[in-house]
Image (tube, rainbow, N blue to C red; front, side):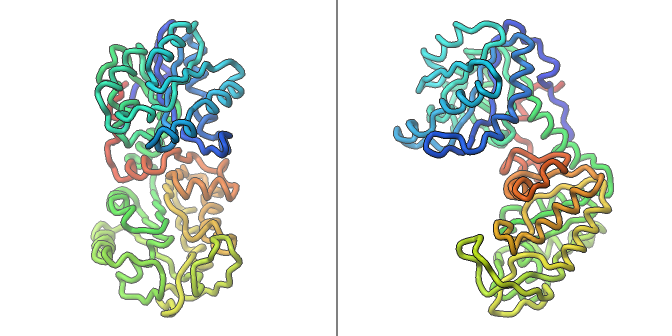
Length: 404
């Protein structure tokens, strides 16, 4: 699925109204932004379009809007303020419950080249997530060029991510952020430099069914850690005690184990495990653990992280790679005692000269939290979107963009 989409580099936007779909779905507390990473990530595309003389109209969703009360809490006004500070110029906020209604149109009509207007939360229109035609047409009618830079929403066919392109007269392109995701997540997986090692963790096998199957066909070595490893261990006939197991997926795990064997791929599972009698409560509470062989977890214990031998096994496999994709932590990384496996993998990736791609969600959070972010080639900005991309799915928000 190697892709080459038209991108923001080769757009002529001078004097044109450019609608840019960003991912400003930032965490808010009492109306204040608690983490502005997503706004910062959008800056290169916005700056480029301003410098090239575009009239830059930004849109994004924020949270889930179900009621009128939600609208009071989930306005994009705080984003406009923070974005203005980061850009060092005024960002006009078009307060408009219709999003692309009269108020927005007035703000757009008053724009000069290089100006920036931010529209209200796209989910203020209930049709947004249903990809309704009326809202798609409204968005298309306020712009001449469309740029999608919101990878985190690219797996959803919404009005602002896909529908709008059906009614656009002008060019469509991806922004810098989206282009980077296509380059790393899409193309590195399709045409990797080998050896290619994929590392999957996280709690449930069910969340990663198609990812496991797709990556087995692409990679040379597949490493499985985290909670989902116990379902694989049980499928091999081992005793896993009270560890998290998805009993409905045991046959699937057996299939994957034999698929790896048939394809001549290495599939690594934990050889030792950090166990305790119960899950920590609260999650970061002090906890006493001991290490046992993964095949012999006592009946009254549960596995909560990979053990030291497994850390070494996984780290060595990662260090021998030229391309590594990692999605999902190795244990309960929110707890300092149970973060050792995730730290060991992050450490190994930080010390290799391979292309290292962190596939969003919890693994991205872990890498940032543990201080390894600047050592990775790419950290994906999408949770669900990166998983679907790794499954080999076509993402609607990318599919609708013109090819280069």
